[in-house]
Length: 266
Image 1 (cartoon, rainbow, N blue to C red):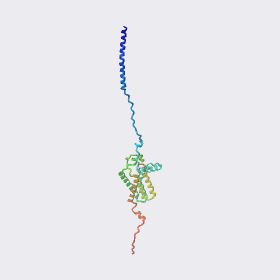
Image 2: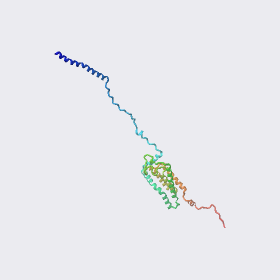
Image 3: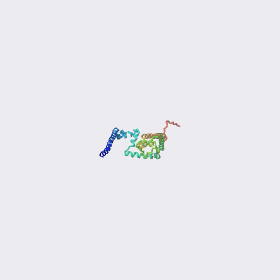
Image 4: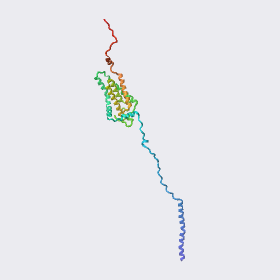
């Protein structure tokens, strides 16, 4: 009996011992496979691509310097940028009064001629000079069609009106104000022929011309050509319509004396 019981205890124990090597061998095989084929390591985090951005001087590379202005434009800015209070006040006053003086020039000359013993030709010459100058200016402006400075140059405005480049008179060359002012001054000077008349009239005409540059509506060449045009027309008119019909010269020379005389005695 005891022997049977002992036998029954040994059988399960030997069976357990027989299974242990297989489990150990299986574990050993798994371990060897794990060592032979290790799990892949995770990829390291990719570094961000770095882009070399060159240093760019925005002010120097993208903003081009303004082009060099012409000599005429530089002279224009010298007059346009005048800031002396007395000069500014004078130029503004002359410019504001110019139109009224243009209109009144012929009537005032005619009134003077009515009060003075003359044939009235100075007033006729004045009217012809103004009309001839206006026609010549209109013709040249529409042939040349030069835009006004405030429509072209930077930081320039029309100080005598708005900046509309397509206004009533959009063209700059030649200056109508300068031409008319010098036509009036020249006609008056040729009629009076007195220095104390010529100097003030030419001073006024020159100030009127400069005022047009200060107000940003004309270039220097515009007023120079306008002045020459007005003075030329007035001179031509004075040649065509001189004072008197020769009576004045005859009066200064005295009565006519015959070259010889014949006396007949009876």
